[in-house]
Length: 266
Image (tube, rainbow, N blue to C red):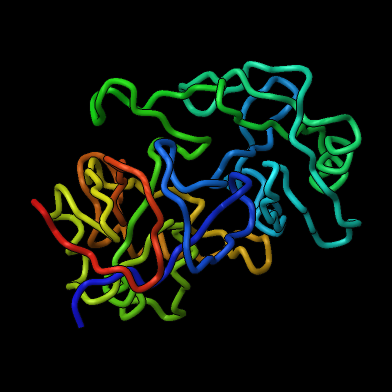
């Protein structure tokens, strides 16, 4: 079968549980509702599953008004309303974003779940975060994602990895927005531009992988054997690190649907 979009995933809360969807709207910052919310510490620094694996157990479903319906083990469900009051300068790696802060009750809920002081913050339209200029055009923006609006991985790349692992891992260990089937393993490494569902995307940079790939999101715990990162490092190491998947920037808007054809433009 020709190359096609085989899965779509949203991550409404950065490092939270994945949300598979059948269709998604493409916006300049990425998929609508993807990583527009984030947890931060007392100083406004981002908290991710790298340090708090339990975050991956926190399930967030977007609401039409930009809020989230939250569920987590041992916690009462919470409706996280879109904030309208105070702002806080928060950091994501080297970026600083002027984000909206959730209300005290929501932040108490998050702090109880994590067992540490934490707050929810929201990226609204006025909270602008630029993409690394070395790999983007002037004016390109990104959500609270690590660095780029979208992540794509071929299903064949995961199949190759799993053929080398004693215990296979699911694709969602790597948290892609877009999964493409019907290609050779790591075919995406050779792409520069693609069209999916009538929308053009620049393929701008390989995704460098970290210890987060060792977190089993079904248990909210890090694996003790260092997999799959340990095996990836044996055949996917580059001067910039261990890579798996490609970061994308959309050059237009529209709706993506599972089953859309993938056309390599360059």
